[in-house]
Length: 478
Image (tube, rainbow, N blue to C red; front, top):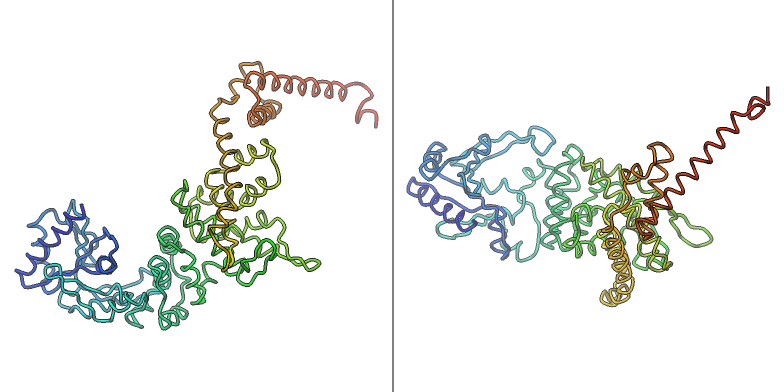
């Protein structure tokens, strides 16, 4: 399909050239072509002809689509091709969308490129000749691995560019230019919509080899406090060096995040999985203390849940996402602890049954272990060290999955056996589930559950009869 889009871009360019204009590939498509990276998002910009002329050209080539009339953006049905005209923008507020846009087909290539955020995104490539227009040193910045803004004034008008700079740095493993970092540190980002923040962070979490770069760059810009205060609180927070030789909680969290990035392709919910890696130790900010010269953070996995919930509410609305990340935070220490300290099958079954996603929980446990690496520690050696633990956890999970394939006792089974819905029935159903986790055969579990139900029923009837007898209970008091 990309080939068809490119062919159509060429047909548009030929028609525009006949009308006296020029067409350029712009933005990320040019950048990624020069980097040798695939980019299926093809944007072209049409210069030197009136808007109406472009509309007529597109009408002659297919069914014209208007995707942003006020922004001069059009398209053609069945083609994934954004067709824009040069425009200038003036900020009207503090938000990402607070702009007044002026479409100007005769603005000129350099002025049109000047509104771009970074030099590497301001490159233009003539669709017909392949000529690269580079007014701001973008090609050199690509070679240097540098994220550098184009224009002080226009850049500062859009605060979302703070986060775009960081996610580009993470995705391309580039560094942010000192002057861009300095400018970003002066920009207010509090008026941005949460969806925009999550969108930029998601690109870093899912596309970057080292998502930690996104947060490290935000730290350099002093831009963590507004949207990531729970993360900022981990900077300089010391840990017990016996368990965490790598350094403070910030360092550990960043290393776990990068280890999780190597595993996210195996995760059932990649974005949620990465967010759980980011949030897992928030609780250490409120539990860390030193006693008798030893640093500890008891119960940080539960103490951190309100902090995680507050953070997630700030950036997202999805209920299932919150449930997943909170559950993963609560349980993140359990797999490795059980693998080292117990061989009780029942405890493993209970852990997996309590987890919202057992497979992802084990991936998180692995990332947590590998996130304790010092600069002189061989990662391959850590993997070999962890292998027996991982094999044990995977074996236990396989046992759990096989167990779950056996049909458990359901409420209807208990009713058919003569039980009546009510408080005792609810307790009996929970008891039956425990027996199922313990691997008790279904028929045996039903007999034991019936026994538990009738015993509890007799006890309650006996207690009720005793309480009603003359002279018993409160009646004797009177």
